[in-house]
Image (cartoon, rainbow, N blue to C red):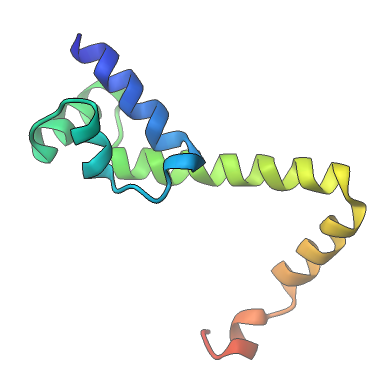
Length: 95
Protein backbone atom coordinates (compact mmCIF):
# COMPACT_ATOMS: atom_id res chain seq x y z
CA UNK A 1 0.00 0.00 0.00
CA UNK A 2 2.80 2.43 0.88
CA UNK A 3 4.47 1.74 -2.47
CA UNK A 4 1.29 2.73 -4.29
CA UNK A 5 1.04 5.94 -2.29
CA UNK A 6 4.69 6.68 -3.09
CA UNK A 7 4.08 6.07 -6.80
CA UNK A 8 1.05 8.37 -6.78
CA UNK A 9 2.98 11.02 -4.89
CA UNK A 10 5.85 10.74 -7.35
CA UNK A 11 3.45 11.09 -10.29
CA UNK A 12 1.90 14.23 -8.77
CA UNK A 13 5.34 15.72 -8.08
CA UNK A 14 6.20 15.33 -11.77
CA UNK A 15 2.85 16.61 -13.04
CA UNK A 16 2.86 20.31 -14.03
CA UNK A 17 -0.85 20.46 -13.14
CA UNK A 18 0.12 20.14 -9.48
CA UNK A 19 3.11 22.50 -9.59
CA UNK A 20 1.18 24.99 -7.44
CA UNK A 21 1.01 22.46 -4.57
CA UNK A 22 3.87 22.13 -2.14
CA UNK A 23 5.66 18.82 -1.61
CA UNK A 24 4.06 18.56 1.84
CA UNK A 25 0.59 19.10 0.41
CA UNK A 26 1.14 16.29 -2.07
CA UNK A 27 2.42 13.89 0.58
CA UNK A 28 -0.55 14.66 2.85
CA UNK A 29 -2.87 14.23 -0.12
CA UNK A 30 -1.67 10.64 -0.51
CA UNK A 31 -2.00 9.71 3.14
CA UNK A 32 1.41 10.44 4.60
CA UNK A 33 0.88 12.08 7.98
CA UNK A 34 4.36 13.53 8.42
CA UNK A 35 6.42 15.31 5.79
CA UNK A 36 9.66 14.09 7.40
CA UNK A 37 8.56 10.47 7.16
CA UNK A 38 7.52 10.97 3.54
CA UNK A 39 10.90 12.52 2.76
CA UNK A 40 12.77 9.58 4.28
CA UNK A 41 10.78 6.87 2.50
CA UNK A 42 10.83 8.78 -0.80
CA UNK A 43 14.62 9.17 -0.67
CA UNK A 44 15.08 5.54 0.30
CA UNK A 45 12.86 4.32 -2.55
CA UNK A 46 13.99 6.66 -5.35
CA UNK A 47 17.49 7.69 -4.29
CA UNK A 48 16.74 11.42 -4.35
CA UNK A 49 14.73 13.90 -2.34
CA UNK A 50 11.15 14.64 -3.34
CA UNK A 51 12.06 18.28 -3.95
CA UNK A 52 15.01 17.42 -6.21
CA UNK A 53 12.93 14.87 -8.09
CA UNK A 54 10.18 17.41 -8.61
CA UNK A 55 12.55 20.10 -9.85
CA UNK A 56 14.12 17.73 -12.35
CA UNK A 57 10.83 16.24 -13.54
CA UNK A 58 9.15 19.62 -14.01
CA UNK A 59 12.13 20.98 -15.93
CA UNK A 60 11.85 18.01 -18.31
CA UNK A 61 8.09 18.45 -18.62
CA UNK A 62 8.41 22.17 -19.39
CA UNK A 63 11.20 21.52 -21.91
CA UNK A 64 9.09 18.86 -23.64
CA UNK A 65 6.16 21.26 -23.77
CA UNK A 66 8.34 23.99 -25.27
CA UNK A 67 9.56 21.58 -27.94
CA UNK A 68 5.98 20.63 -28.83
CA UNK A 69 5.05 24.31 -29.03
CA UNK A 70 8.06 25.02 -31.23
CA UNK A 71 7.08 22.23 -33.62
CA UNK A 72 3.51 23.45 -33.91
CA UNK A 73 4.38 27.17 -34.14
CA UNK A 74 7.75 28.08 -35.74
CA UNK A 75 7.40 31.67 -34.50
CA UNK A 76 7.34 30.38 -30.92
CA UNK A 77 10.81 28.86 -31.29
CA UNK A 78 12.29 32.13 -32.56
CA UNK A 79 10.73 34.14 -29.72
CA UNK A 80 11.83 31.57 -27.12
CA UNK A 81 15.40 31.59 -28.44
CA UNK A 82 15.49 35.37 -28.33
CA UNK A 83 14.09 35.52 -24.81
CA UNK A 84 16.61 32.96 -23.59
CA UNK A 85 19.59 34.79 -25.02
CA UNK A 86 18.69 38.44 -25.04
CA UNK A 87 19.69 39.22 -21.47
CA UNK A 88 16.17 40.03 -20.33
CA UNK A 89 17.16 39.59 -16.69
CA UNK A 90 19.58 42.47 -16.80
CA UNK A 91 17.13 44.66 -18.70
CA UNK A 92 14.39 44.10 -16.13
CA UNK A 93 16.75 44.79 -13.26
CA UNK A 94 16.61 41.23 -11.90
CA UNK A 95 20.12 40.19 -12.77
